[in-house]
Structures are given as C-alpha cells and as structure tokens.
Image 1: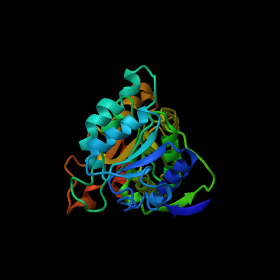
Image 2: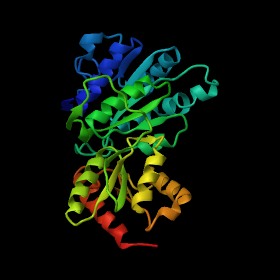
Image 3: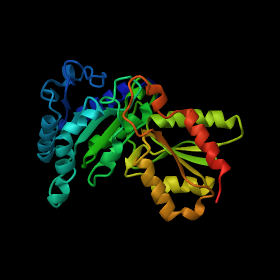
Image 4: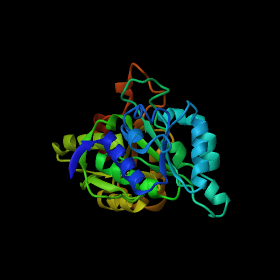
Length: 325
C-alpha cells in the first residue's frame, strides 16, 4: 500500500487503464496540456499524446456525443465534465442517447463510456459550480452512478467503471480531491454496486456516500463519547445500490438515518427510505430520518451553513433514538 491524494488515485486509475487497453482515451476541456482543471490528468498528454488525451472546445454536448460515437465503434472513452453543473449542456446526449442506445439496439453492441464529474460545495464557487445532481442520473434507466469516498475506493471503482460495458456516471466530490489515503499498488478493482461498512455499530445505521461518509465518521466519534455506536454504511454506488448490505445493517440496528450533501428533497435518500419502508418495515423501531442540504441554491457567502455537517448527523441520530413506534 502507498499513500496518495484522491485526485492522484484518479490519475493512476486512468493511466493504468490506458496502458492496459489502447482503446481507452480521455476527452474534455483542458484535460490535455493543462492536465485537467483539478490536476486529474497531469502528465497523461505527454505520455499518450493528443490522439488519446483530447482537449476540446467548451462544448459539453459536442464532446459527449463524440464519445458516444466512439464507444459504439469499440473505443472506451472517459469524458471529463469540468464541473458537474455543466453536465446540463450534455443532458440530451447522456439521457436520451447514451443511456438508451444499448437497450434500443437489442444489445448488439456495448456503450462503455465513463463520464467523470466533480460535484459539491466547499470551494465557494457559487450556485452554478457547487451542486450535487447525482439523483438525476440515478433516476435514468441504463446509467450506473458511482460516488467514491476514499482514494482506495476511487481508484478501484474508476478502473471497474472503465472496464464496464455500460455507461457510468462517475461522481467525485471536489472537497475529497486533496484527501490522502492508502491505495494498493497492485492492479485491483472494486465491484460496482457493492457497499462498504466503514464503521460497525449496533445503535443506528447511517447510510451515506461520498463526502458525507467522512462527516458520518466524525459524527460516530462524537457519539461514541456518549455511548452511542452508529454503523456507517458507505454505498459507494447509488445506482445500483447495495440493498442487501443496507438491509443487513438495519436488521442489526433497527434504526436508519440517511445522509447526503444534495438537497434532501428527492435525493437518493428518499429512494432508500421508500425501499426500506416497503420491504423491511418490521425491522424498524423508529421512523427513518434523512440529512441533506436545504432546498435552496448553493449560497456563495453562506456555504458553510448550507452543507450538512457532522453536527447535523449527530442531532438526527439522537432524534431517532428518542423516537419509537
């Protein structure tokens, strides 16, 4: 194992997959000479050249559609959207074409596209550069949605996504880019759709992903000082999500809190809450509770009050422990 930053784990995954398979290429704005807006492709242009690390004009719709054509002809494109917010310009290509093409053509060919996009607040970048829009894509049949929380997970899941024959929306929280963590030096992959229990506990299950995994772990440390032990389940993938892992945890704790950075309304927490209520309601000893951002655009000047925190998770956990059926 070695310790590297999250952003360089992304670079390593892309570099290793480009070495392993000559059909893999990277396309997007500033991914070449500039090395990516956040440094994820630094050095790849010099190593693989302009035919495999392709700088594009500012046209998300254009280069995402180019990637779709390339994928349908046997290549394996990695598309970088500079900020997740900008994916709105490519929604027609992703939602109406990329997600549906394999289904519409009866599985005659594959569509192995990975669309990488940094999301979330934390940089005071304003409401058009700070959104968490993963629930949009989780709602679209044909797309997989991955949200890694650690350097180890981001490398293993990105390699799995690049090798997958279906389109994958790969969501990276910007605040995690600088995080350091241990990464295996061997070639490893992490299966898409498998959750990871980041901390075991018996009092309350906290289901989460991406940045909120770390806020949940902070909350776990705070709560443990009061004798409350929460189990933190990192989904890692929200579409498909690991129902078995979540249900197993709830069967042990009998209480559920779901935490995500996106606005609470209609987030992935709502889907998990509904599934638990429909399928294992008898396992619950108290109402399900959710932690999410307020239903307003991300405020530039009040960002630190907008993003859910460990304190919010602590308060919600305590609230569910006070309640019962």
